[in-house]
Image 1 (cartoon, helix red, strand yellow):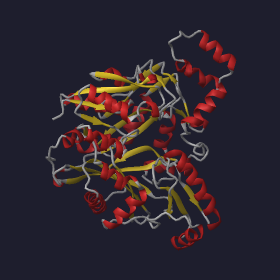
Image 2 (cartoon, one colour):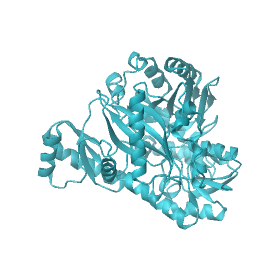
Image 3 (cartoon, rainbow, N blue to C red):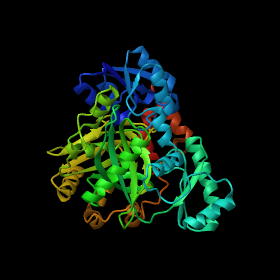
Image 4 (cartoon, rainbow, N blue to C red):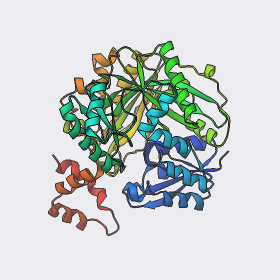
Length: 498
């Protein structure tokens, strides 16, 4: 077993991994950027090392710096969490070259499933249904228009690299196709450095169901069932639940076997998630594979009783899975709500600042995975996820009531959050009756779902800079000690922008 693990991440997921490692009596090393000096993960770890300036490219995405810290501090493994370098095959490859275990799949598996066109082809070869579309990139617009006609409209143009809704365009008719491809290519290039796109049939109002898999290095692969991830805003998940209210034993068996086939096809090792969309006739289609730990992994843990982070660590250390498929049981229902520092009434614009008061929910079956504390300053540089609120109930109705109570207890002042928005979804009759689809928020919250979503950091920085007058900046900086970051005063932005 490993003696010391570096966590190449921040926030709630870094804290989550540190806790699991400590329970396994493994020492932990945190890394942090300038604005994360006082972050919770830095306080929790046994050791912590400074990476550099706040922008991720100069800190959490700097492979050379992270590997230097790992080797210098005597780490024998690195856990990447999710986001940042977690699905970067070059990072995994360089860890291997440095004789440091990467707690995740191989670089080769990442490359197979990370590029969506290759992933579609791999799934097809494994005998798993994929959404009708192209498995090649078409540069000839005339030929692409012909394929579009064959597939049928509406269709989606999608970036071949990346995710999170970037580089995606809905096309309703042939006359929109060329401009949609051009716009998607431009956005994909800016977001991922890769302008490649492909097209596929748009499935109307589907369910988004994902299957959790575990695979060791000894040929054993099993699935831990599904998670319902249909409540989304602009392709970003908001509320997840396990099990899915859509699921039947037969459908779970079919989707679980499909996920295992894909994992086998790409020689997968460690924890991973195969994502599907399901149409109104319960036909399912492969969407993509996330070759990392998912944000929503806690709900699977709550229902199965299996600690996924500990399993990841054990698999990376070479241990065999001590479970077989018949050992997996699903008890009760678990829901997860993502708590964001964002303003639903202002197009979900990020709301950085200092948390002045924090009251956390508690009680039987209530769990909070968090990276915040009272007095913590939420930075502008990263995703605005503050924490994940998770509950477990004997059944779905009880879990919903428990989440409603937990959200009513969750009090955060000093910044704006999406807590009230989450409450409104849970009270929605359609949610209660499990009438779910990926366009749920678009249908029932049209007035507040039309915002541009999580703008790029560059866009946020430009807007923020415009909101500060030169006079305000001079007043703030004149009162700030020479070595104090002006980002400390960022919380005032909330007042200035109204």
